[in-house]
Image (cartoon, rainbow, N blue to C red):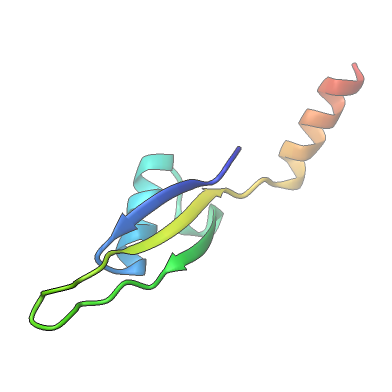
Length: 71
């Protein structure tokens, strides 16, 4: 599975959004912070935090893919 972009006011909000969309808990989420985001001055110039996230692949998932390819 490829990484998907998620953005929110904070990194933790972006992680929460990614978990909701992907239907997983945060311990099964693999993510990279692209932008921390900023609040700006009095809200002017505020930027959202941006992460790239995907579901962590487990050993079991990798084994299933391998066995499907072999057989």
